[in-house]
Image (cartoon, rainbow, N blue to C red):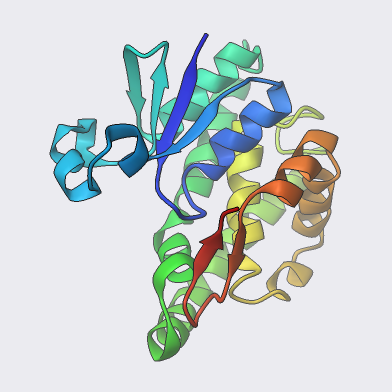
Length: 215
């Protein structure tokens, strides 16, 4: 099987799918959209389903758009999907709740600079803290290491991505939520995830001139 994950040069919606594939030992290629299509994004965009990325291409012929659909497919491919419909629905609820953190957190970290960064960060903070409180309470209700059980799933990696990304806005936020802090540590201690986090492109100069350092 050939899997190609097409995205941009930013740390956002492609992170959770990559961590899930790394954890499950699934081989894939991560390709910048302009390299895959050999054209600028503005020219490629009208051809893409929903005109959005990421896009997962399977065996050069099947295309799956939308990050949550990609995560769902990877879970099934890895045998991590949940048979019990009630527990599966609870996992989906956490997945969708975590996805709500995408805006405005990811664009602020990847693009905002100077006074614009400060204003957007401050405006976002109440909703960010509220969502982190929700996730922290869900972990308090869980008797397991992660949201559903002791096996990390799509909802865990998506929540982890946003929590970890928030460190670029304020590294102390996580200290307000003990269960979330332990959750992040538990994800980071998974060997395959440790390797991925250590070797992925570094995100630098957030709020000044944010960029990913590749090669």
